Length: 310
Length: 198
Image (cartoon, rainbow over all chains, first blue to last red; front, side, top):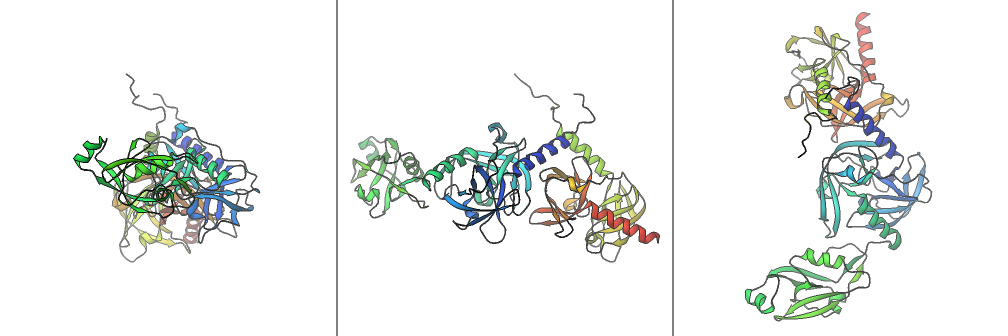
């Protein structure tokens, strides 16, 4: 291919990258809510700022430095431990929400920029999307629809800042608290659903029945006699007093075989089943007690505090 | 069946290697009891700029430029900056244009050229992180770059996508590459050369 001597792809790419940073800079704020360096946040909707929950150490009177250089005061509208997101309300913020990148800009191998405002000016680092993980389970047990692993450096104060496509626009929110300090970002679609729920409810609904479980192998005889799908079940090793499972009559030593017809092989299967229970709904558990299967209806309670056990 | 064309429409690789071949002719390797590093041929001929920490110590000093080794001596050190000027009459190379630092923008591409961990003539790519300015005067004090540097990059150039000099790589702080701004380097060389002339 003949190449025009005047065009230099490096110069073009460089100009595109710096333009993407400059554009997003008008929507990135510095949040002063912890010791030492401030963290970053993104103007996600009108008067609404999103950041990383672990970097915002107080709930009221959060000082925010706006792109214009002005100061504003924000209040925490809600936090979610699983996604480590915090949503702040800041009515004084007049800057428009950040625009989104095209979905195709966040594929594995795409050039991306992490942008932060750990002070007065925006700073950037450059790299690629290294993995796009579906159904990622966070340290606290919650399942996230998607998480992007990044091959780029996340510097102090970058958590809560935007991941930006080389072509411009927000892909997600960066956070170094996932994946053992490695660079990762929550895609905008995940952020959106968390923001929706935090703004309306103030917390993320995590249905909870109050049992601790452990996987156990079942004997052949037991499997054949009861015509089970799997030779694994979850044995109940602890019960929280007064919670849903207790109220439904679940006992220590009960073997949970299935819920709503879906077999349980790992504790995470139970978490997934719980997550899909609608508000005010219930789940039908198949329990083996003394070798005899029985059906128990459990009505999960909403748990608004963070925690891992189902 | 579709095939991927051998020459992609965006040929970043060949532009980067062209940049590297330009830098190769203007970056020297410095060997000294202090450990050495990289240096930049300044003004086309006769002078090499590097970090003071690459040369400061009594003892022999040699530079390797375009495959030839020259015994040289340092002539000046900057006050307050990690810079040294070496006189090297027989060394020549292309002049690096200086980048106007006021036009630097976070996120733009930068390249470091040097000899990291003893690997001669290596190119690294990264992004500009920010410019640290003097609180009072507003003059650039340091250039911070999101780029992977290692010992041996010291004294070498940080350039932009066009190959213009942004700064002299000097330190790694918290994973960030830190460079002395090109304007500071130019001011030092001018002052040092005037002193010699006087």
